[in-house]
Image 1 (tube, rainbow, N blue to C red):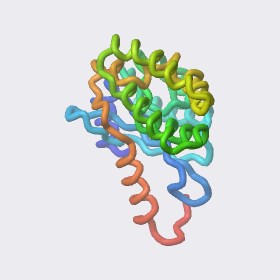
Image 2 (cartoon, one colour; image 1 turned 180 degrees about the horizontal axis):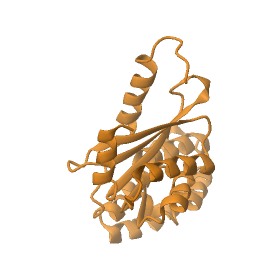
Image 3 (cartoon, rainbow, N blue to C red; image 1 turned 120 degrees about the vertical axis):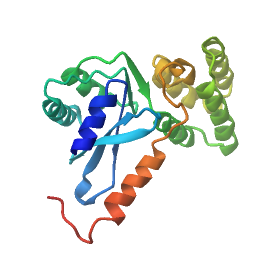
Image 4 (cartoon, one colour; image 1 turned 45 degrees about the vertical axis):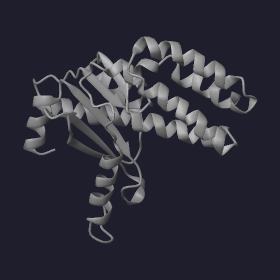
Length: 220
């Protein structure tokens, strides 16, 4: 983290923090964790890059403690914490930095998980597609009351098809209780562009760390 990134983190870090890790960027299985803020234009800006050879709560705690030490007396208390669905980032952050009022899931990760499980649990491609369209409708519904009515109706309708039972069971187990973290209707006032995606950031990072690094470069 350079001085400019540090100042940007101090200026915007108490609004929304986005944390994500990307695999396969470097040799030897290293993982790149990126901490981003949303600036005044609501665009993501990377403030911290951290390399690690594994991904767990203890490693993330070390990274967050390092950030805390760099900040010194400056306290970082984001209003919104945007991550993937795994609890690793969130649990480590809460232990080191304290609780966050609003935790949201990145839509890119949610959709990717849905597609992966649709492919694994539903044999018919036609039914995969029709189910995905229903899920996208739920995801993008902007009215809370409409969403809460649609959710059980859609799931009950899907569950009438035996071919969809496994996926519906998976969805109920993993996405009902935490629906306020992924449904767009619950982030209307969070000040976040609900359509923003990590995909472009992933592609940029891969370009920088794979194609721009010297051939056969080792990690120091």
